[in-house]
Image (tube, rainbow, N blue to C red; front, side, top):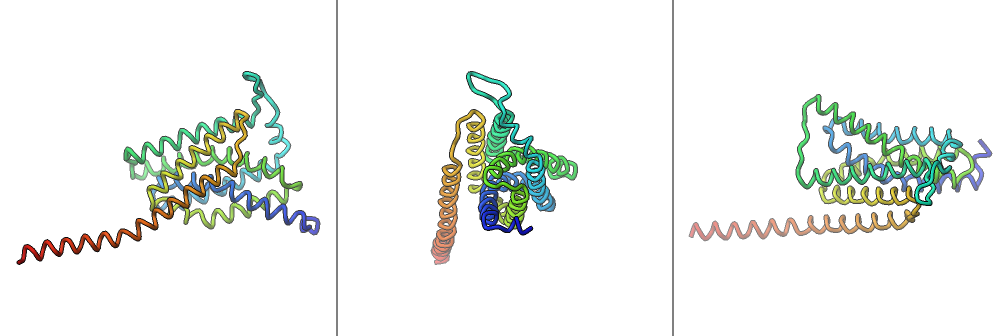
Length: 256
């Protein structure tokens, strides 16, 4: 235990925990959008299951770290480009994310309905969990490979993952409720997922994109939209007040 509590290990733990939280933001957004399709009573359960599965998956990959690192070994060559197992996972996950987010945006704009019967709710729950598992694999792979490059001891990586998931569990419901209350935020979040999917496809094709640019663009867009929401709330009571005055004036005119 004393060996773990060295200055270097504590710095690595704090840095890695912060990075895991940042890398988990896209996972939380995706889970929040998916569980929003479920009945209210099932959302909390699906959210917790999704995050716990993400944690256990990352820990399992960390314990099988030698196998994970072998995924970077080229499997075959296409047009002078070496393709590894990691590349295939990133490509598949990125394409799935782009397709899923595009479908969800289309569904929101076209107003597609969802059944509310018990059988339909059960089927939706199973489908949501299956989709969370698929994306957890992609996000976990990226997270684990990042962790390996930042810490030497697996125990430090596991603790960082657990701390990050604890923080995400704490804020996941608030994020999900906020996304559900504001349709424009949901469309923005889905657009983020398309951007992340494009980044994963690019990574799978060997084109590295700095994640800092992606997260800065996401943070800036979210800030602008939050300001728009606040602005609409400020102007709404004023508009209602003027509307009430106009109605009152018309009523007085009729009475006279």
